[in-house]
Image 1: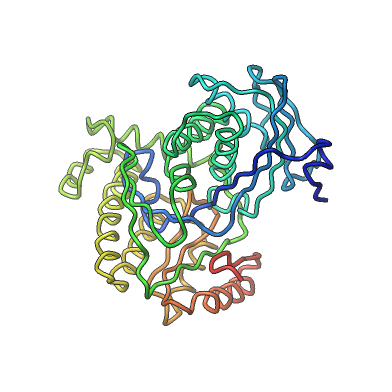
Image 2: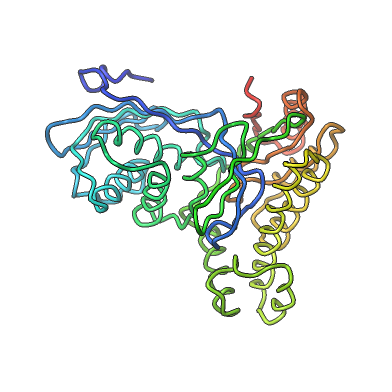
Length: 365
């Protein structure tokens, strides 16, 4: 049951802030290798309300958690509890260690970004909270620094070995312009989605997690491959270097092949968008899904079936898994004005065949 800020804390909030989830059009599992990505914001957002306190106590409540209780900790005494509060604690620890002066605060969180949907619900929380803290305590941090603190919270406190794409997208992207991001240098360019295109995002209903399991293994495999190839990161290799992968053991050769070719696909996708070449862009999406399924092995049968169903729609240019994988969502590039109907048809067939509850998130109803 939802409670207002005043119901929870006996006063009104002083600051309100929000941040979007994101969908990655192309460029998957490249950011932690210093590569290129192309995300956009989605309509779903995380919203926070905050009021400063005179002490160092943080009291926080989330509408989206099953335990509708106020949770507490003190600044300087952050300690992982293996729950949603760790993202809040990680943010305050990262900001304080960088020299930003914080006081305690009361916090209310609501969100319609699906948890475990591969659409960056954690980054949306981190960025919205950092925006609120920046306003409440007059902190001098720009939008790129906000992304850095969000990533640091996940890496160092939560224990999720994520790259910086999610936080950069949540902090800087919008719904109609893709963020062509170089994740090594954090340089970026905004590339408008062609007017004749529409994105469709379908949540498979199967949750994933970046904190544990195979996501961490994939990052370790990429780092090991780069070490064996004697380069700082796989980003430092191009398609002309693919012959070198024959020296790598299985499955490192396939992991590296995906990252190298995916970086090339991102650059080609930017060119296709700038040239308004939607058929070419769609083929790149399909070409991205195949190695994510076969070489990188982060897809699952339910996701593959969603992509196949999208391919049977005449107004679809391309589709692929999006996000960390092992569940989550797909992104579809469709002819403008057809997206909602396409998404609903695909979900109906998917639920009938696979027995899972799919959801069309974009376009919004």
